[in-house]
Image (cartoon, rainbow, N blue to C red):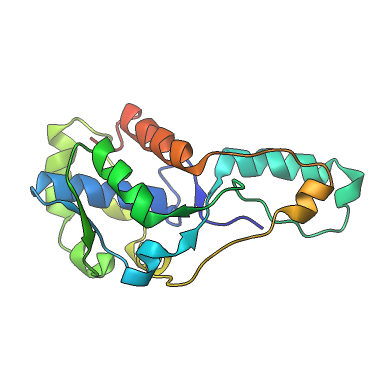
Length: 186
């Protein structure tokens, strides 16, 4: 059971990394600081990610490990983050100022941003994807609005022999770089 799956993709509407990246790109283009759009409690709650490639390795390991037969296992990166600490690093990646929480519905805020996105896309010679092809803003609103700690226990997988770990902050920034390198975001 993964949590907060992130990976390089252009067709998964349930990848909050892409939503955050697009929101940041549009805020920067508008000259705005990067404000956390979720609820205040979500900014400070404990959250966790699972990198898609890391999850795939874990699934192969579990499928070939007799100790995991007929077992349900949690697979996360194995660490925890708070958006409060990751958010300024995301802003730094986009070379923009970070700011505190300003709760807003991304589904509503982004509803009229397609023409602006196409302008950004053309200016930076990005791949021809609409915002709707890249993310689901309602899903992003849900993820960034959860005001409770989310901590999955990896003990069962570790006791069965799983030794993997993945630094979520480094993963997030690396995946943002992958989106940029592949001309999805500026």
